[in-house]
Length: 240
Ligand SMILES: C[S@@+](CC[C@H](N)C(=O)[O-])C[C@H]1O[C@@H](n2cnc3c(N)ncnc32)[C@H](O)[C@@H]1O
Image (cartoon, rainbow, N blue to C red; front, side):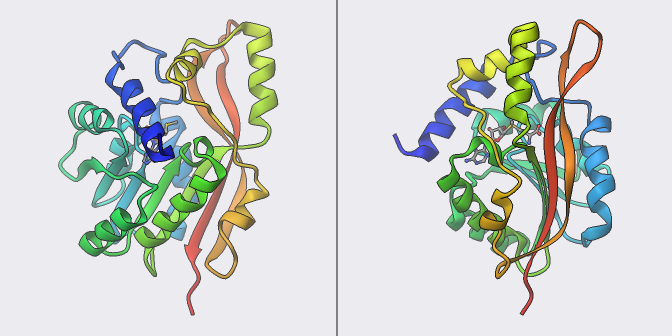
């Protein structure tokens, strides 16, 4: 099975069996603690006249929120079941959802032809691709950005692995995380240091980066919500 098909098969199963039970989508945080916090970090860096693409948007929880702050928002996904679900539960007049496998730079190019340059919001997508596939995804991102778009990404950091190990040892696996493993989705990592290789300085300008967290829907017996260590980065393509 090619890697693209592997992602499609696993994620389509994941999204097509989603029932709406609270807690079943581990990262599906209330946008006022997710996209809202991200927005504060990236909004001053991007041209608000461009469309915003939420790449790997899942069920559209964050996408709908972003639609309240930008004129045109497009959520894209590899899984048809996610596109269908997002269109059902997170619809708005200026928000649309469509298929895009981020490992298809040719398909990204076709979207760029249609929309022109776009800003990109990327939350917790790159880390679950293999290192080779991360590079291909960045080729797609490059095409979608064009000359003037800005990318905001937030991904699990190197501290996420020991964090999960400790969490599982102390409290057992959170049901939302167990569901991820059941679908043969293996959350990987994106090391902060990988950014310089993945976004080389002759192609991308790093505008800002820093530590952050991916808030989840899982609360501990203490009442505390689990927040997974992460980092954010803001990039634009180099101008020559
Ligand atoms: C951890 S979820 C994050 C979803 C969303 N960004 C959020 O924060 O709610 C990762 C998402 O990436 C999508 N995905 C995985 N591989 C993909 C690919 N090759 N192209 C596009 N989307 C992909 C999955 O279907 C899934 O919805």
